[in-house]
Length: 110
Image (cartoon, rainbow, N blue to C red; front, side):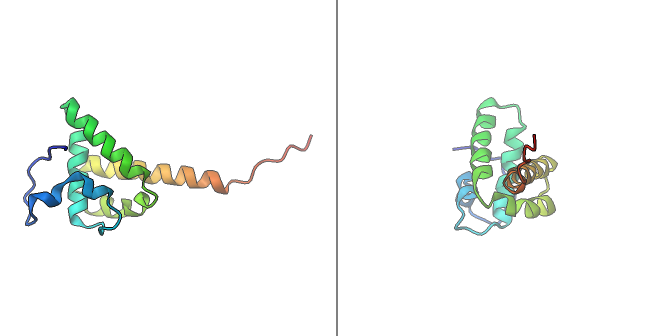
């Protein structure tokens, strides 16, 4: 399990488990935003083991069909600029993928 930096929080430490981020049945609230912040810290940190773990969790989060729906909350409420950048990356990817499905193919007229 990814070790998270200490966050002043009124919540028990077991709620800071990064796998909570991947559970779509839980609401996307301040706890998940704090977890996302911590994953961004680990992802851009110098510890290669934590970086690899954070990368895996962030890729799994990005692969969730509704991940892009939470990017606005991350951008608005995150205290970490790197987390905001990652949220923008997730949103950009969702836009690029969805626009692929809506583009009309160019017909060959020759």
